[in-house]
Length: 242
Image 1 (cartoon, rainbow, N blue to C red):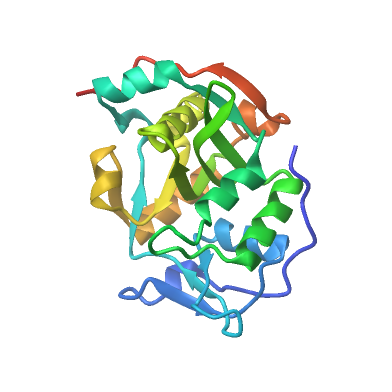
Image 2 (image 1 turned 135 degrees about the horizontal axis):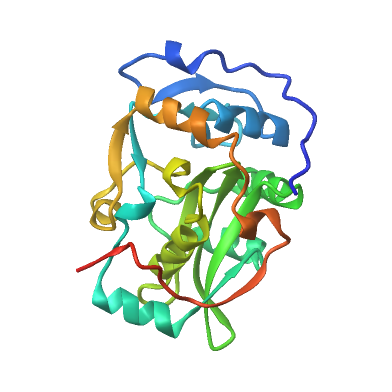
């Protein structure tokens, strides 16, 4: 089970009082585990401002991207890829984050400080990787923060076609249990690519309401345990096939 770190020295305030027209809601603070968890519990997440000498930016989007667990869209070709890959949890967290932080990727934002901060969260049991493997090779994955019924996705990568999508399918499967209707899979902002997979936008207030219901829930079994191989990827019955 996760280890609760010392509380943050910083206060983010009441998220219901944030500027209704601005995604950027705070500047500064630090990336200590207690600060990060306090932020996620209030609906915020960090991103570097562009220079290591500048303060951290904290966002709580006015329009939040979330993936309803029953709304994941799985094409026939993606379903075939799922059958060909194996889903593992937390077997290569550092490698997943490093791949997501590859400076050759366009619009990269994961710097050295972010990598170190989420590694500390992982060591305490709060940050997790969901990985797609083929023939003993890590070919794709994603990582994020799990607090009760919230999974706050941070980034994903692929080295083979569909591998990051396979990891997303695996994540949804891991979250689909008796609490699935109250769990929240947060992707921060929607994009056309994510929308094609079923991501929708909701208002900040709606997100905060869902967050308050999700965080008291128990963790999904795979995240409450120590991780390890989850066996060949497979799909449940609910995701729509197109």
